[in-house]
Image (tube, rainbow, N blue to C red; front, top):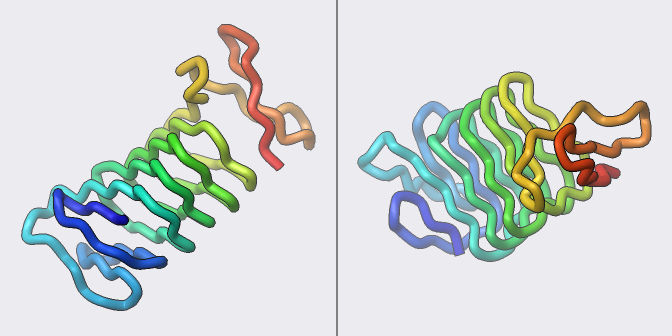
Length: 134
């Protein structure tokens, strides 16, 4: 289940580009330009050029966004990348990156440091909680 601005949809791939929202190739662009995405099921791909927020309660294989905060309560089985936005995550099996934003672990809600060497381990500067990034 995918919720966009309080409307529910089913699909496996979401693409938001130039203000248009497509789910499995079908245009479902809301009237509002305040786009908030909530993933409650399992989808394969989420590609977003701009939105206000993304919440993942289910599972997504890969997330790639240019702008917007990402909150992962569920799982990302691949990579999570945003150019401009904060990432709050629990379980990400691939790489995590943001160019302009913070990465926080949901267990402690603190900002995580850069990964330690090539080990791919993010460690909280305040409590020492760590998150493995494969």
